[in-house]
Structure formats: C-alpha cells, structure tokens
Image (cartoon, rainbow, N blue to C red; front, side):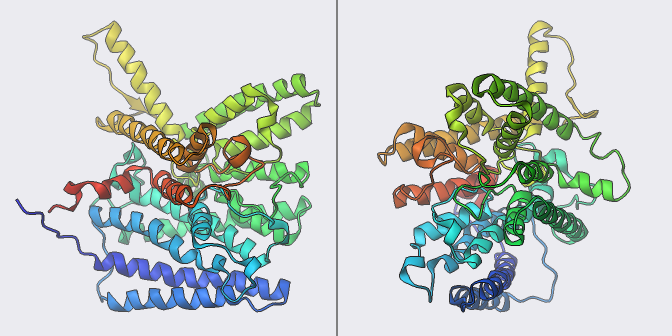
Length: 491
C-alpha cells in the first residue's frame, strides 16, 4: 500500500518564520550592547539579523493565513523538532564574525556547536579567551541559553504531555487543552510562564550584582542560571567569583530546576504549591543528603572548614544535578570516588516542567513505584496492586512509557559513545561527551572535555554528532526519533 502524506506543513513553516523574526529581533540586543560597551559597529549582528529577519518574514508571508494557527499531534511533533534543528542554523551566524577581523571569526561547525549548546541549555563550549571576547558575543551566548530555557519550559508543559513522551502525560495542566488542538488555549499559560521566567531572571541578576559581580557579568550569568544553561563570561566559570555569588547561583539554579507550574499555582494563591509537590520534595531531599555527605568527605580529605566545604560541594553538585554546568573548581581532582559520583549525578536532572535536562526526578519515582509493584507481585502473585503517584492512580501506560524512555535514553548514549570512539577519541572522553550531550549538562570528564577543558580540539564530525545528541536529549529522545519512523508519515 503506497505511503500517503496528509500533514499540512503550512502552519509549521509559518511558526518557524515567526520564530526567525523573533530571533532576528533578539540579535539586535547584543548589537546595541556591543556598540555601547566596545564602541564598535556590530556588523556581525547587523548582517545576521537582517538575513535572519528576511528569511523569517518570507516564510511568514508565503504561508500567511487568516485562520488562527492550530496544531494537531503530528504537527506538534514536527514543529517541536524542527524548531530546535532550524534555529541554531541561523543563531550561529553572528559567531561567523561577518565584518570582524579574522581572529574574531569561527568556523561554521564551531558556531553551530556553540549555538546548539546554548539553545539546548547544555553549556558545552568550543570557545576560549572569553575574558577578552567582544561583549556582544558573550551576551548572545547567554541570551541563547535564556531563549532555549523558556522554550524548554513551554515544550515540557504544553507539548510533551500531549505527545505522551516518557511519562510526561502525568503533567497535563488544568489550563491545557485536552483535545488534539494544542495552541489556542495554551496562550494564557505561556504568558504566565514568561512572566515568572522574566521575574526570576531579574531577581537573579540583582542578587548577582549585590554579591559583587559587575552589571554585565550579573546579567549574563542570570540569563544562563535560570535557564540552567551554564555559559559564563569567563574561561574559569565561577572560580573567580566569591562565595556570595556561588550561593546566589545555588539558589537560582534550584529555582530553574523546579516545575514552573508550581510558581504559577503559588502566584495564583495556592500557598502550598511547593510543599505539596512530590517532585520538589524528593528533589530537595536527594540534594540535601548528597551535599551533606560530600561536605563531610571534603572536610576529611582536604582539611577544609565546614562552610567552605559546604559551598564547594553544594555549588558543584547542584550545578551538575540541575544540568547547569557551572564550575567553581575542577572537581575531578577530588579523587576517583568523586569523579564516579559526579558521573552518576550527570544522569539525575531536575523536575519535569523546568529548564533542566537529564532523566528527571519523576521518572525515578515512577521507576521505584514500578519496581516495588513488581516485587509485591513476585511475593504475592494473586495480589491486586494499584499504582499511585501523588495520591492519584497512574495511567496504565505510564510505567511502560518511562521504561521505554530509559531504554532509548541509554541506548542513545551507547550509540553516540561508540560513534565517537570510532573517530579515535579515547573512551573516557567519548563516554563523558556523549553522556553530557544527551543529559544537557555541559562539562564532561577527562583532560579534553572536563571542567578545565572544552570541546574545541574534537574533530568536526564529533562536534556535529554531539550537536545532534544535544538536541536529541533536549527533546526527550522520542520527539526526534519519531521522525525516523515510517509509520509517522503514513496517513
């Protein structure tokens, strides 16, 4: 039977066009900042903004329709995947350095890697010499983190629950449209998300400034912190900042990794929105245990006082678990046990509906509930076991959905690791680069991609592969894999 295509691509192209116009507008923000701070004409942003805006406007006009944009499930899949594939292609243009001296330009491979890392809030970088880099480029990297962060929250809260990806159906919200039409009734929810996101970012910037950062550093790090993105304005990341700035970072990295729906509920009068969320309670409890244990270990092994050990442990552990990727020291020097511990923490992630990556807390919770149910069945085969999550009966397909996600997640890491190893990259670098890309953490392990290194020395083929892996992880694996399924395209 021949394959038939019944997907209407016009609304997808129209939304992509609108997003490119918005991206062109955002490009002018670092252009203005660079003109003011460096006193130069920011040609790299002017050319890039004009070209991106032209392409976006052309797409909008070519698909213009008087009817409001409505998306069904297949169109939502395509739009979600296409957005993260297309935007980095244009966001990379300023890094090519059009109109700048040759020593300020970067290859297109490096530019795309950097922008994919930014938009997916991974935080891996191929750039060095950040301390002397043009302020516009630094701000653009931070803005990409911030733009990607809010895009991730919107996708996680509105799109993914309807796509039933890896257990996300648990988090359909009261404001979401329960039909297959996704966009119209979600508009109010997007406004709430944006308001909360902007307010938290502003508070973070003020707190960083009060902790001793310059205004430029404070704004840049605030943009990257709430997005749990990890781009810094310095090669040493947070190593050059004091403990006050690190505690501000800890607080707002946690804020970015908490479900944004909880903020909205709290703002609308539900005073116990945070205290009653099972994800938040489990997440904070887990972090408290790990941080305190690591603090006492550092006090014993490195002879640090309690507060210093607590700060170092809390900042770097929260950074890894929330998949932010900031570093205040090279924690791989803390010993083999610490390296193994940080590697395992790379997989954890924050809460669903936040800006963080990784596996997410609720999936571990569902996995534990499923494991406990299986043990009960083994002990009492005739026993009727009802699976509950937060006092409500779980959907019957939820455990299978989570297990399928975990299988695809770890299979993706294995495949990417193997492909990197086939490029003559050593195993530690290959495994940690694949893991940090798919979990969207940022720094890996080893001398090359560890906290003290970057990804610049990897071959171009590896950078393209890791760029794909970052998008794969950011889109919860299935969103991208679905596009390779012939059944998806059949009517």
